[in-house]
Image (cartoon, rainbow over all chains, first blue to last red):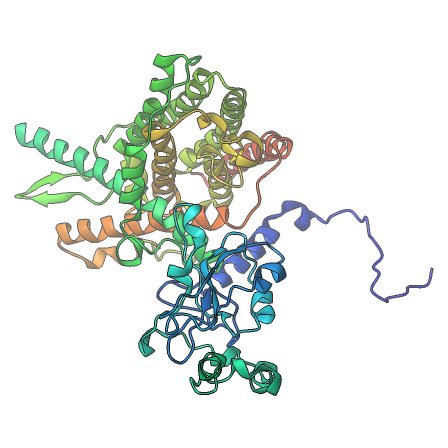
Length: 206
Length: 350
């Protein structure tokens, strides 16, 4: 029969020769191979001390961003939770009180925001769904823990700090599409926060 | 007389401690060698290079909960690991670890018991070793344990025949059952008389060494003959029901056995404490020190060889194991025995 792939081999059922039946040359050959591995460069790393280089857009532990003045960007719209294929995200919403403008950027905010890191598959769909540039995946690795409940990360672990030193840099994740989105005239509310231009100050002017 | 007894006591304790120490670090070396042969790093967290890993393992073994099954025979269940450990430690008594020390003109041999039937004693004690496994496996009252114990005993008994015949061949060459005689006969490396006049027994009859080596692998239940404890079929073999330090004793006894078999192979076939140009060292105490180091290096090389083989060759199937033992090794060792006999007769040695 004609061979289609030219890779077929004729199976031979020939008797093994005396040397082959002794197995010793084959065993020595095997031992030579294992010994060559003995001196080879090891593929494992001493993990916490050494780390393998990861992609600039590695999808690790999430961060909930604050804006320039330190107000939480999340408006608790729930699009991330809807987008999440693993249903790892839950949140409850609350209304911003007067005097909390420096804490929350929009009138509505997430009172609680939880991601179950054991359910999360780190696909990044929440980041794609977010209209407010609030949630990003970072290059941080979710650390191991002892209790299942401790893997449900609340706002205490997800929201970045206010101080510049505590901010988490996600500029590498902000692709051209994201940047275009930010500067699109339809979404001016996503641009640099300016009290004079903001809706609140406009309303206050009336 | 009292100095003699004190000296022997010191030697006994030293040999005991060194056996345990080497067995302890064999567990570390096994993991390290396995890792290196598989392109990994191996244990390196406890201490520098993970050198305290055996201590941590030992501590873990002691701290574990001890479980004795209700249906087991409690006396035999406890006796099993003890017996395995006892017999494996007993064998080190007749091995000469180095040339004798000379202190104030008195010779102190570095051998606990220089008995004239050392080889016989060695094999007597080694064959008792199977009882530890048998008793442990039977007393557990568990089918896996029993199957493991059956495999272990039939394997050890089968391979002891071929091993015994190869040792008889060796004894025909050496003409002595005393281990210290076997060591002194292999003085140096080469007599310089003919190109073939090596003193080490390996060069006199390599086939005997090969048979002995294969049987030693089977006797110590090491891969590729580790059927008694093959995890894939028998959970853990004869020590399935064991926990805590009793399990530790079984595992430890295997490593002590490996150490002793390596020492025996170094002694029987590779000159023991002898090394080339040993006559150039005049001071007997320096010679004793260097000889001991040489003996231990040879032993450690064989331990490494055991591990190297374990991490290279897959396990035998049980029928293949029995075929190799009964249909190949025993006839081969018999042919070797007869051929050696004719050779010795032909060259006028007997």
